[in-house]
Length: 81
Image (tube, rainbow, N blue to C red):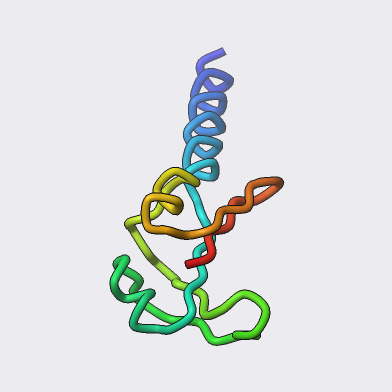
């Protein structure tokens, strides 16, 4: 029974962390750095922009909108700055 309780606690904590993850994209790497990104991932800039890897400032759609971004939330949450 004790193992079941520990497993349940781990699953709940994992779900809470996953809910807080927001994939953030910006038009430039400098914009990513301004929100605390450690790295800029370059991809299809015309589609999404540069990915702001490791950013710490945007944890929800509300945070994204506060920074004048556009938020998309379905299976995953994405912020476009």
